[in-house]
Image (cartoon, rainbow, N blue to C red):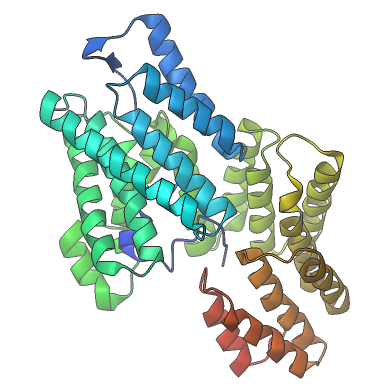
Amino acid sequence: MLLFHINMKRASAISVLLLLLTGPSVTTVRADDRAVSAPMATDYDRLIDDGLRALYYLDYSKANEDFRELTDRFPASPLGPYAVATGWWWELTNEFDERNPALEKQFLAAADRAAAFARKSIKTSGDPDGEAHLCLGGALGLKARWEAIQGKWLAAYRDGKQAFDAQEQAIAVNPKMYDAYLGVGIFHYYTATLPAVVKVLAKLIFGGNKQQGLDEIRAAMDKGRFSRTAARLFMVGILVNDDKNPSAGLALVREGRREYPGSPFFHLLEMLVLDEAKDWDGLEREADDFLTRTKKGEPFYNPIYEHRALWSLGNAALGRGDAARAVEIYDGILRDFPLEDRWITMTYLNRGRAYDRLGERDKAVADYRAVLKRRNVWGLRDKAKHFLQEADRP
């Protein structure tokens, strides 16, 4: 199963709207209820583009700076407060696995401000271009995702349903606001792929079907102004997780790497897809390249990401059948990176698998039990329980 932010298959339908960087298609830019001049409109778009680009380079301070300036210079636009909330969310989910009380507090406060601002804008202006509804749906969607992660299902349902309704209203107001199609498309697609026990209820609430969702996500990917990359990421998840077509997913990831050259995010994502494709040579090559860039101090290749590339290097060895080499790499990660993040949990899991293949069942069981003692992310406890019952085999 491909992990990272594109793993939606195991998620509730409530938790899958606008998890990444959706944003409105800006056709009319207003400030203080007046159409802004061309230079200001250019600055408006530039600040959005620069901020989103910084997020994909994992440059959170730059993104926050751009989004704050967007909010200050264009105080009538609901996009500024929504962009600020999105920036906090992106950092929270990439760096802290949704576990950082101070950052969580900042994110939730920002999401509430963005939603309140959008509601006020809708009430005062009528939202003639659908932008405020789009931002309302985006802010509530991010909040619903956080609530789902915390297991607060009633709150997640409430905010998720309101988010879906707001996105649909944005499209009703402006059918050419293609960025809005991503949120509703995600709902329509995943409600059609939920387990049968909840599918009927979900379809009654959200409607749509799998093909409709795919068409909407593709519309955002092909025609969206600011959600193209987010839609591409969701499409990668669909191609790899659902369609079992990692080569097609890899092509989209490499499009992203060409668009954002030097982005550690897309580099890491390519390694995950190569892992799914069982391209062990390619995975080792990219992991070595990532580590080289990190050691050279290339911009944005922060040493804090080194263990993620090492994990991929261990997986390449494991995939080739060299379990002893994999254990050696995983041992180094656990020795040198005393962290609480998901990558360390996955290291315990995969080291257990390597021990199983070496016939060292007691050591494997100890690692699987270590996974059970750690915070549950990405369904890793379920995987550990499976291997506790049945030893891993090549």
